[in-house]
Length: 577
Image 1: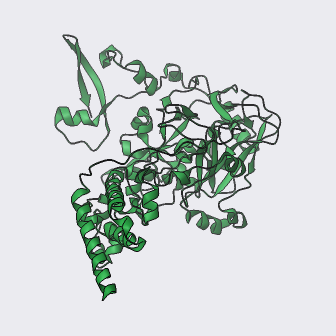
Image 2: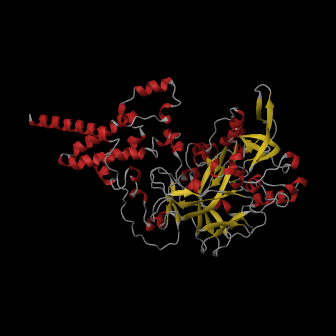
Image 3: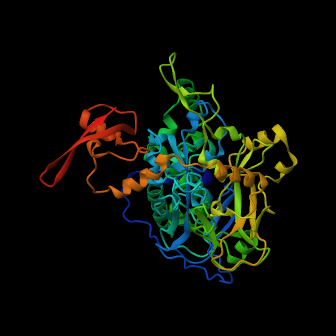
């Protein structure tokens, strides 16, 4: 009959189009134009350049938004601090424990000196509480690049200042626009492909940077065929074709992803083989980059699949004023307070009662996780282990950037642009108060173990505080709060007990000396060597290159025994151990 004949005709058309796309998709005759609609003309009633507001990514919590237009390479945020977290797993016995900062930390490569904080680069994590924690990532729509951080002691010397060592030397990690940014657009930085590969169980199979060009090839061919043929047939045919195209993505783009195949035992693989094909295909990142309806396909032709959510990621200035908080009311600088190092200063006049800066809080449920231990040799194991028979010898530096209470094990670590540079003063011009908007306001009704369990069940920050002006604050004035009597007592005790060691007068920070000796002649041990507080190390790559020995360590202890000049080149005899 006619109905059956029409159905066979439609099925044949779909099969033919699938074959055409499979043949041509790897070498399309053209590219998708990177043409975007003109920028919206939002009002400019506020001077705020960056807002913190609910993210346009579903389930992502808060995000950062542009409060004005930015041109490529414009500075977007001032440089913020980076706090090294050293050998955290080892100091906690290499046991599994809840550590929310894992979702916010970066590799130590954000500042080159940080890589040398321990013998293995991989054991150093960088807590970047400014843009590193506040910016979200939407691969394909990345519009922010971080500026390379610097390293110095903010003018504090160990022989003179009790504040030396109390603050991180790593700072000035700011951000610039990597492309033109429209007012109201959410700001995105790249977390890198490994971040999403290692979190597929949490975020699903998010398309990675290399997946969008593949998806664009499919999009282009569908658009071309739609204009040639499909527009003459029913919408249902187009939808059926899209479903078949997405199901056959594995054939067109075979996946070799580590996060699908690696670390699977045989039982997992057998279970997967029994799964429905549709469920397996949904784990293909190119599959998830391709829209599912003809309307979506047509709508993103001007953008490409990477910009699929471009229109969704823009908020009006009025919306940001209502739902967001300004993040660039403060700028960085050297503090006017003795021994404080760096500080936060108002970037514009601020009225009494106004919010200076928002500060979402990353919760640490057990403060003992910041304990650091001495090492001891375990004869049974045959290697060095942490010495838990003695009290901890130190705390992670991150503790100095947390809020807590003497009677609680919970620590709250604030993040946001420059909020960790706000210092203490007995005559503060600002205060901390709970934000009116909380992601988990129900936590205020919990206590004890119930609160800890609720916090450890969250893979994101749940509470937030605000810095509020106690009086009118002039532009350029340093922002301060009262840290509280417990902190004041501890600081005064530290100052009174501070006695620099005799050799502290000759103290020189390793990062300062590294900068001084770039392209310089290195002194040998016979020539006096280096200050007593420093040790010499050689990069593990050189050990492998020169000695042919595979090294598991990023650095090896070393000392320069002699130096030779051959022509214009300097050569060194180095002992490693």
